Amino acid sequence: MSKEDRLTREKVSAWLAQPGNHLVTVDDPGYPPLLRQIDDHPLYLFVRGDPAVLARPMIAIVGSRNSTVYGREVAFRLGAELAQRGFVVCSGLAAGIDTEAHRAAVKVGSPTVAVLGNGLYDIYPPANRGLAARIVTQGAAQGALASELALDAPPIASHFPSRNRIISGLSLGVCVVEATQRSGSLITARLALQQNREVFAVPGSVNSHRSRGCHDLLRQGAVLVETADDILCHVESLYHGQMDLLAQLKPAADADTPTAEDNSGRPADTTDNPVLACIGADPVTIDALVLRTGLNVSELSRHLLALELSGTIVRIGANWARQSACK
Image (cartoon, rainbow, N blue to C red; front, side, top):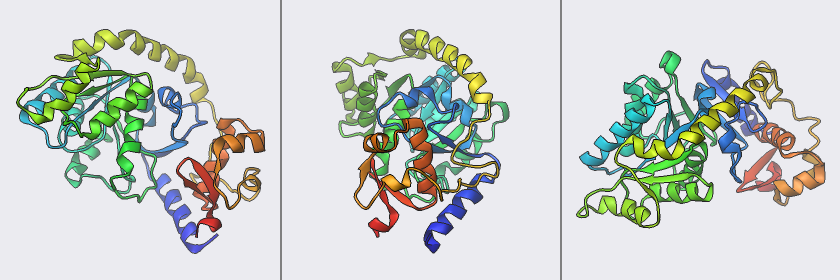
């Protein structure tokens, strides 16, 4: 193992040793059940705060960073109303609409989940560091910050579309409050449709370009939203179904389940990892690895995570390759 790989592993271990920091793997019984349903679900999530909140019924509220006063007021009101009805508000901690949705949940004393487009070593945008701290320190109403990215990954543009699939994948539905026709929020709405999630949109002024994305969604069949009741009537049965599922899964989640960490929080040893022999210089897909190893996806994901954290392999898009072959 190179010095750089060893330092990476040590950083992950040191981060996991800090109170409130977690690594949730796809084979963990506590992995969010809705997120596991999507085809490109992350194999693991770094989580700061309460990882259990990721499995609770969520509604995502997203929208423009350069929002209007109207948009921010609506996002805050919807966030507060949904939180008071028992939903977890999910968003991306961006400026504007995302910020107001998170602030509303914190204000009424409910948990909220922020999925970041960067690693959890830092908060982006920096102006939301205080808000992020409040999200994870609310006691019984503690929420969570989550990211699939390396702890020190920067907030570059290519990370955000991938982040958006997690926001929609965690949620029963996505509500777009304000968006231009080129907004990243429309990417989240499109992903939600692909994931069979509900899509909601708030109408705005016909004179504002920041409402045109929402109006386009409404023309395409999104549910028009004025109050939280417009959302609740479409997802109430889904809410109860998810709560029933969580009740069934809780005994398994309470059991001790081995993951890619040992009890000390350090990544597991990879010396005898049976998957490594099936990964070479050429990138290989997870489907090919299932055939080569005979393991199911859950078992395979655990081995891949251990190998990645050790620096032995790297992920290239949806494929895997030996670290030495990528240098």
